[in-house]
Length: 221
Length: 221
Image (cartoon, rainbow over all chains, first blue to last red; front, side, top):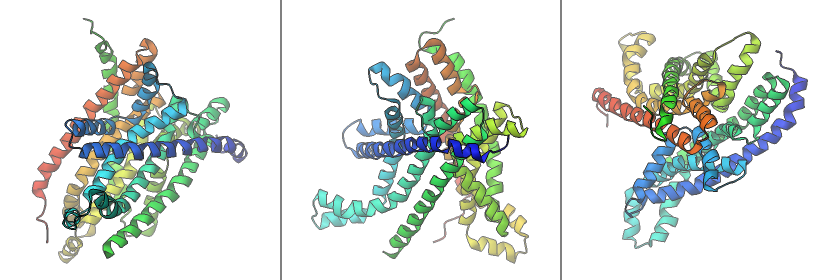
């Protein structure tokens, strides 16, 4: 089976339409995970009884089971409880629920990374808790988080082909459909691989660049 | 003897879990060997070797694991290379994970103090001997925790092989859903079985790390 450039060109628009859904799912999932991660991270730091344990349990569960099966669970089981979304929304919820467990740890590590002396100094200077957070802790905690979050964004992007299994016609699903109709596998899957590479490689270079930049900034302080 | 709901599903699911463990172990073997080959190649003194190893890592990390598996499964046969699903799964996941594993090897070897290399040269060891007897034994310690995490990632990634018709735990789940329609019970149990397999794995790695750290050199100040 030769790689036919004409056929590849012919199917490219369909794949790129799928790529738009891929990107929508990635950013939607990431937005949900950023919020969910924040809730989990705050829950882990909460002083209420049971809340930190429950949050830790959720995080451990999500991190130790496969995303594919979690997606199946969300797709097949939520409707049984009367929660029905369209397929794309279900996929975004699944990605968001999974990645919020990882992102909660990013937040926590970022906040733990701020030296204890900064908190003590804030108390000594009689800053209000709000000022301590917004002016002292978060400005130091957030920059080191950004490259890590960037890597998770790329990771989520590469996980989106799983959404094809729950009937979402994203890029990989589009390729599967073309392959199923034409029995030509080489062109669609090769193109999908190349499109992934074309998007994730520059993104990972950007993350590394940012990492180096903030790394030197922090060293200078 | 008949089991009460939902445990009547267990025998079929556990058969799938066995395949999941088999794939995990074999792919881990492939990934481990390739990780060292590629990781050391990225540190090689010859530019073309380094370049090829970098391309290998960036391609495998830049595209999706599922796309890679489909590529091996559907496109290699067209070039006359026919692999059964098990071999495809082991090679595909092994290749994918080795890209991440090689980064662990590379980082750990570079992490070893440069003085160790210089001392080896002073003792007129060949580079290969120095690597084998001096550098790698120290680097191995640093590799343990990230390799442990990677093993759990691999266990979760094996769920993808259900999509190339291998009868693993996830595949067993799909067939049980199709034949019984009890989606919530099946996927709930499948998630729990994955959790039960992943948690001891993480625990085992932490134990091993604690055992090995006895041999850690005193930290220089």
